[in-house]
Length: 427
Image: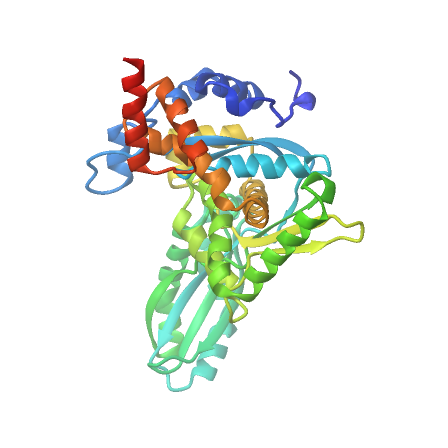
């Protein structure tokens, strides 16, 4: 299959065996045998590597990695690995992407790859003058920061700008310096933290104050990823479905109690790709939720509208500080394999795809809520987990799950009783 003929629309992908799916993904992404073997290994990480990634290691925990199909991002078909323990998440992305595939898929953009480090200065009686004194040393600050990571500078990154804010607090005014740094294809936490710590003594000497915190901000609002897509009304079940989804969005936009669950659904998709690629799920989650409250009220990360021709148009804007170098993205073999599946060469490309997945996930959740309800599809997939927990093995899993769904009682006690009946009848 030539590259130009590659398509993320793989008929019957969900009905294939695990091995067959892996072969299809390997063919699409042109994976070598080493990468195929890594993905096929049930554990995916040896204890020696685990022991050097974190402290006090006693075991590893495997999370399933599914692949979202039907994704077309900026005119290119991609297969997207997603690491999650929750049923229906991957399926929702596949179905949502399929419904907008013929209308062009997802169009994305990024604001850049800038991160912010904060230096907290306290104990100054003249904060306005202290602020200006720091700003007067901009060129010196730039030089100090760039000396911390000459390799980053060689790659086109480094110090970009300086902001100094006065923050009123319970303990009095704080002078907070923001270092704006282009971290290129790294998430950049270690780099900007080093710059902040190196700069701190100079800020103290210029102002006479005391520096305490010197650390990045996870509200990475200089590193936004955006995605948009259009779903024709006829492709999603008609105008009534469209209008129900618009009403669901209006609810989330207006009410923080709804917005919290609305955005959690978005992060189901976002965090699954972030985790699969070895990036920092906690940083991305924190930044996304902080960004959702940036106007003083927690609200939706997405926007939904009706176009002039009656289609449903969705968009998302979200901070996505992800990288391709450093941390687990560089040393975890399965994360590296997932990046090979994606075929991305820059952190910006990765962020754009993740934003598209978040939008697809949101579409799927809102459509389910506006039509059959979230439980029908979710519980149908969750029934397999309940069947396994009840002790079903082999073909029993699918048989028992089907019974639970038919009875609309996807519960552990029902599964146990039905499994006993199945086995008694087969004896």
